[in-house]
View 1 (cartoon, rainbow, N blue to C red):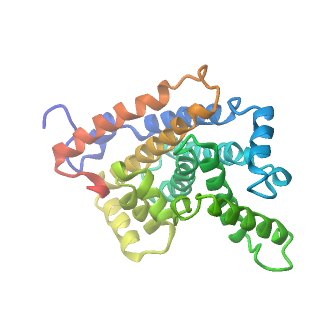
View 2 (cartoon, rainbow, N blue to C red):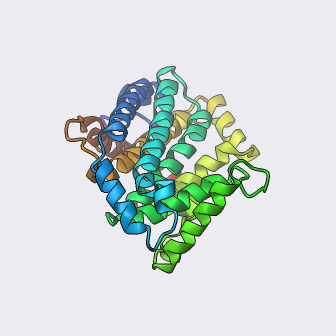
Length: 286
């Protein structure tokens, strides 16, 4: 295929799709995401107080725990965490790494946090966003052993569980439950092969001798397989984090943020995908 690198020729591959170049772009994209997360919120303090007053008759404890602010606070924190992971991937690629294991480990929390942002922001209804944010808080408490009576978070967990029950009694229950991460990633990145991508990253996070042998063989024979996969990990993660950032736009005053680095990711991915199609190899999520 003229004009594209030959299969298993790393030098040619690197000429067209430099990992260092993508690493630099991931850094810029991560900074853009961080700017969007830190932008002023559309929900003012006065509006948040009014929303809690609306909640309180049916959702006891709403005002005490300030739950109307949870959606914005959680999505900002989760998006910044996803952006931080993407930034770290960018630094790795700029260091001339051609080994997909470490970028894959960083990609997993990036996807999880990006999916959480999409979950909370899926609907504009403040009741839905708040009910879902409460679910995320409870999940965090439970993962921090707050169910133990001697935990300093135990009382907060019980209070938020009661708030969740109150939301459920108002029709914001099962339909808005927080799914396990594999299902959450699949739901919000379904058009992007979310489940396959997440499962592949998990093969790097947990010990997997087959995975390690695959990477070692690719390195030993000098093919561009590891470079291709490293590129795929980075570009797919960057696009997922960018999508999460865009889901936040209607809840932030971020018109002054330059979104061009995020839009350009789609062009990079398209060009790279054309190359893979030419080799008859669609990457690990064919």
